[in-house]
Length: 174
Image (tube, rainbow, N blue to C red; front, top):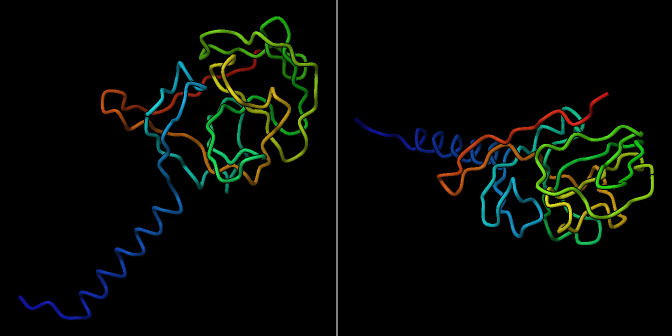
């Protein structure tokens, strides 16, 4: 069987095309710190869907990876809590979205802080870490511009014993 230069070039071009397709659609991410405990642990490796928000907007409850407004060279992981134009407040350990309490079955402890009602700016998102009392997040006065979002967390692939899809529960009881 004789392999021609043409066959080698076609195979090489296909490999490069597949590589770039994968690089533009998914990315790996390593969790650093405890801000997303108990759901994501320090050192876990995740797969992020980078294309999903090209087709739709982020939804409440989704865990996203993004560049925080003040540190563009870093990547953070947090949960989307309030959407553009919504009112968010924290009182007596409960988060309120447009005056409706948020159902948060995924947190270990409720927030020990208060946040007066504020409106999330257009095209920005209010995000919190699941470890509410140990997270640098939107309760410190910043929101995430849509353009800073890298993608949605879909899958945990490391360590091998923690291999799983990420579950997203309904958060608002209306």
